[in-house]
Amino acid sequence: MPPNQLIMGLSLFLSFFIMAPTWKQISTNALEPYMAEKIDQKVALDAAEKPLREFMFNQTREKDLELFLSMSKEAKPKNRAEVPTYVLIPSFVISELKTAFQIGFMLYLPFLVIDMVVASVLMAMGMMMLPPTAIALPFKLLLFVLVDGWDLVVGSLVKSFG
Image (tube, helix red, strand yellow):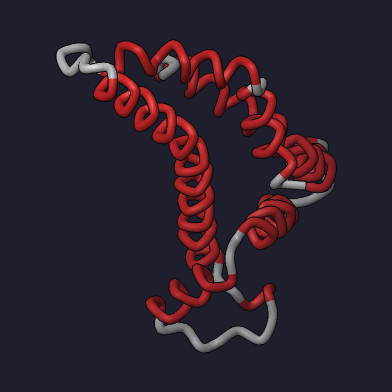
């Protein structure tokens, strides 16, 4: 497992990369006009909120949105504009967590198979005192490198936001 600092850094830079088009929209439509004093604060906040809400709606599962709408006891909205932001944000977070767990599970499966195969081979050879993880780890690393794991993980993750 890579160190937490590496995972956090990768997450941060991938977030910047994925969110770049949204941040450009916010900068162009809200921040720059506000800084040039062409619009007031309320208009700037509304202009900044639109691209963020659009991004979150595109990544939020309908089921998760319905869950938080029912818990908020709000009337069923007729369109996206009527969905309150305080309902959209936790729906988005729950949707992203589900996706993260799915990715984690898909990464875990081949490593689990390697662990089972190594344990079975060691047992068949009568090597019960040798820990299977000591033998399986190099095979897991080799598999990850051979299939270009970082490219697959990062590429799939970034493409999922397209």
